[in-house]
Amino acid sequence: MPVPFRTLGALLAPWLALAPARAAEPVGAETCKVCHPAAYDVWRESAHARAWLVLPERSRSDARCTACHAPEGARGQAGVTCESCHGNGQLYSLPFVMRDRELARAVGLLDPGEKTCVRCHDESSPSLTRFDYARKLPLVEHGRADREARKAAARPAPAGR
Image 1 (spheres, one colour):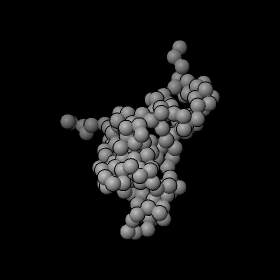
Image 2: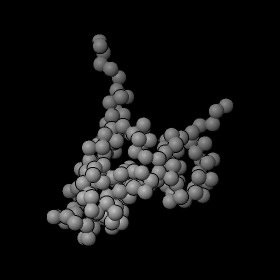
Image 3: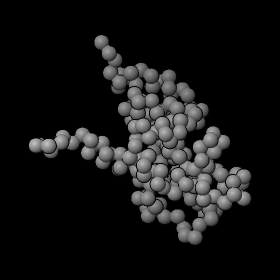
Image 4: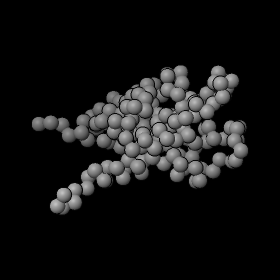
């Protein structure tokens, strides 16, 4: 008899939780896109995706700049990627892990909030205006796009078509 995903996740949770989230390797935005295409599309058009491109050439070797404009730059990821905010995905990106919210969080999936944003959008970052989390959140909110896409895909086709 096959083991249900929830049971499998419960069995593996203690083992996976032993590996700290920081030790997990990034998997890249293309991996995230497989299961989250709508969120990926929102991100791809965002300022975060272009963060490296807008950084002046003279600043691309300054760690104070690259820490925010390309936090995964040392691993070949330019810009602010999914994992810059949600944590490195090596352990939580597995489909059976992502189906179990508790397990995914136990092995490194982060739920970003205002504290995540102000790591880069702080008083020292060059900006013409003060960072306003409530005003900026709708610009990066991408989970809703995925939920709406899943709902649309689950709707039955109209009768007679």
